[in-house]
Structure formats: structure tokens, C-alpha cells
Image (spheres, rainbow, N blue to C red):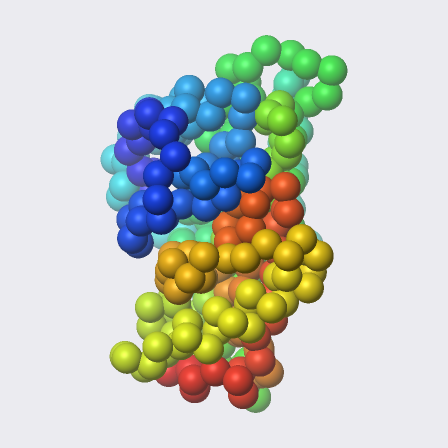
Length: 273
């Protein structure tokens, strides 16, 4: 369920890399994108502590890291309360508060709850191991939901995270889950279009224009970043648009914040769903 602890980064500013090592902007410089659950004053140390703590918790519970549970946990298993089809998780301690809501009826519950559990456990372990401060460390996660087709053919859930771990600024990021209700399979960006559709050739110019309009910064996005599929992994599908969600430091500098861009479906290649 949980990934092994990452090695400590050396702090150098890299160029844009491929699917397994993409970079982004932060504080006006190109550098490795911080994992969503870590933006702290000492990124290297906190990143290592968080991943190690989450992995250790899994091992203590008898779960081999990287192995999915046989059945997805229920809302109650996660310590939440169910209201209709929405699970509310509230947790607090001497140094932190945590609030997460997610749809308990999303078809691929295992993937959804695995991600929530990993980020919750990592945050709590880091917050509990950190010193007290004037304001508690904070994690909040809400969600957007979308569908397409009549009757619905696809379902999308986008988790929207806010986290304050005492760094220079809080962090905001997204994690999307998309599901084909007919084939009963997850939908990823890699499977969203037909092979050789070159969808980013039409998507990127639309995204660039909209981000320039939203930010008012006049910052150019490099073609390498704009055509890198790893920057488009978080999206939602509606009847009329693909909505792309970009975390802090993804395509735009970190100070521009998290953004989202609707791309009209009639302006891009047809979806292979």
C-alpha cells in the first residue's frame, strides 16, 4: 500500500526530466517538484521522515509496504463518519488538526482510500514528531466530483488538499481518480486518447493561454513542461470539457498557487473511452 522511503535529494536544480523525474517551478527557480504531502522548511529531511514513518506504520500493522489490502477499508475503518455517501474524517492531536471528505460510493474505493490513508498517516506521523507552534499543523482535503454521459459513462473524483506543516507557505495539490463505468476500469491520461493522437499538441496551447489569463503574470511555460504528460495526470471528465488540475509549482511558479483549466472537448482529439 505504501511506497518505500525516498532517498534524500541533493538540492541541485535539474532540468525537466521524463515521466519518472519531472521538475517544476518553485520560488521563481526550476527545481524538483516537492511531493504533495511535503512543503516544509527542511524539505529533504521532512520528506524522508514522512515516507519512512508511513512505511514503518504499515509494517507494524503487519501490512507489507506496496501491497494492496484484500478489500478496501470502509469509512468507519478509516475513523470517519458517513453522511449519505460522503465520508468525513476528523482527527486532531496536541500539534495538528486533520479534516478529509471523500465519496464513499466511488467505484474504485481501494485506489481512493489507499491514497487518503498514505497521506493522512504520513502527515500525522510528521506532525506528531514535530515541535509545538502557535498554530497547529493542518491538513484539509475536500473533493470535486464530475461525470459524463447519459446514463453516466465515466465518473471523476478530484481530491483537493491543503496542508500547513510550518514551511514558508502552505501547500495545495490535487489527486484525481477517473473510472469507466462501462468497462469497469480506471481511466488515466495514458489511456484517455487513442495512440498517436498527440493530444498535447492541442491541449497545451489552450492551457497556456488560460493560465496566463488566470495568473496575469505573463510567464511563459516551456514547451518541454507543456508537452510533458506527467503534468497532466490530474483531470476530470465532463460532457463538455476535460478539467486539468495543476499543483503549486506545476507549469507555473509556486507563488502562483494551485490552478485548474477547463479544456473544451470539441477543441481536442476525441477521448478513447
